[in-house]
Length: 102
Image 1 (tube, rainbow, N blue to C red):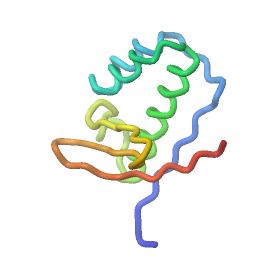
Image 2 (image 1 turned 180 degrees about the horizontal axis):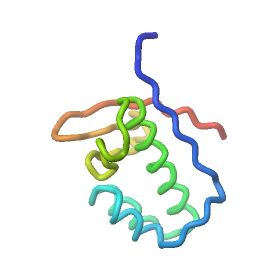
Image 3 (image 1 turned 90 degrees about the vertical axis):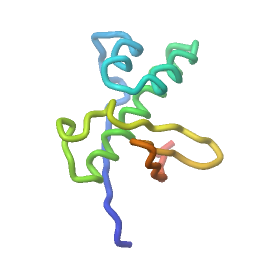
């Protein structure tokens, strides 16, 4: 396969010093923050936050960029159950394939 690959791993029990929505407002796009705000269960919200964070970092790594070159709030990831994961930036859209280790 001739494709760029990006991998990111986050510790499940990672300690946070700020609230999930506070971090999302700082690092994510408004649509991603709204998506997280709609989740009322704090555990589920945290799980989705780290899923988005990990996908965003993996995408930046696949592009061969660092976070300073491609900040996480510069593109949006939408989790679409039936279609996979969609990445959007400036009206361009990409499809990501996610391997879940559950």
